[in-house]
Length: 332
Image (tube, rainbow, N blue to C red; front, side, top):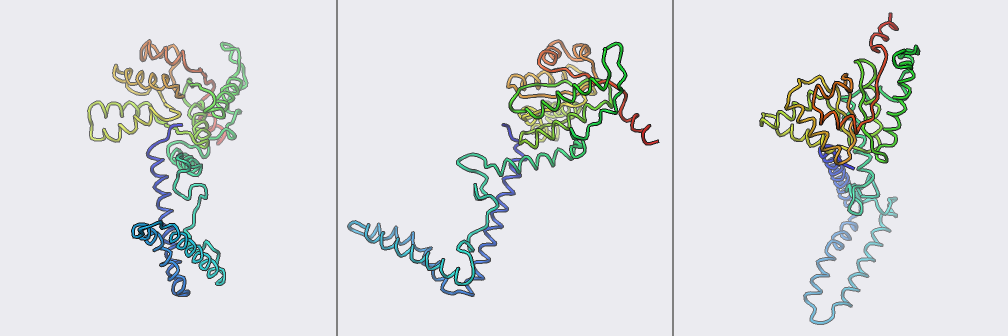
């Protein structure tokens, strides 16, 4: 699983802030309690000096320091028991002075047994979903809210099926893609006229995949190729553009929207080939949304690009009337 470094760093930084706040709160409780229970301060001071005394005993002893260490250990245990009794006597729990932790598995460090804790993965998924919601309508565009009644049930004689029938098939394939992400490898090409639900279903997929903890990179082809250009010509925003390119190449899922709306040049064709080839070689899924028909890909780009897409992607054709027009009629 690949993580967006920016999001992961933000999650780990927030954990560090939370941990610091808990420690500060524990220290505040400690000092307030010292005023109420002076003996508690004396116990803590003696316990804090235990390690230093153990080292001094080992260094100063000409013989075997084991007996002295054992006595020091017994004293330490006795002090801890006295501290526990003091807290209980004042109606407090034994761990009252310990910093609170939100995650008992990793104690808010973010790591458990050398790996990212499940709490980090959960926070990562939530933060990624939140960020995706700023560029995609994933809060409203869900599989459950998809409306098939926007598509005609009249059979298209050229294709032998109705737009609604085709969309049922497309919907099921997109949902299976999302639900089985990480278990099955696939790529999708969603093609057809504007306003038929390509971005809607892509948004549904992005939401589901993100909520499962996988990283998702979404952008339009115009933005993607502008980042390539920014890096190549060392523009003023080349550093940020390079980070975006790294995200496109490494995210668990890349959604490339509106392919074909960018200005077609040899440079954009080269960039598209590089991006697709990099991801396909590593078996990293890609979803492409385009108004272009499959037979236009070779003319628009190159035989190599068309071969990658037509040979490695499941093709889903979108049919029907522009949904925006259907909605306008509904609202009259």
